[in-house]
Amino acid sequence: MTIPELSPKEFYNRWPQNEVGEEVQLLDVREVAELELASLPAADHIPMGQIPQRLGELDSKKPIVVMCHGGARSLRVAQFLISQGFKEVFNLNGGIDAWSKQIDPKVPQY
Image (cartoon, rainbow, N blue to C red; front, side):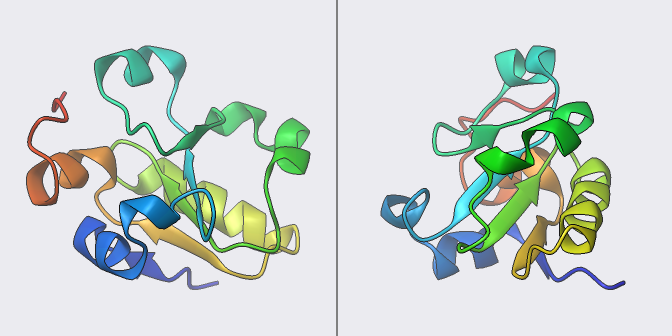
């Protein structure tokens, strides 16, 4: 199963910051300790291991862009969401690390 990927720039151009939450759900699947190092205020946070139990918190009517630190965990979560019937799911290629490099250097790298 191929999951479409978006770079942070593509995500930002497609959904300006004021649309995140209303037009698209940005799902951060990193652990709480990682959020303490770097986070995006517009992202909803559900750690990867809690996704199966918390599917009800996701809006299946909106596109969902899944992010993690570098893109590997988010890709697995995106594949899982598609297998659960979610239709429009993207992986944020490069995760928050790429976000810091491409969009906002004030977001700490770790």
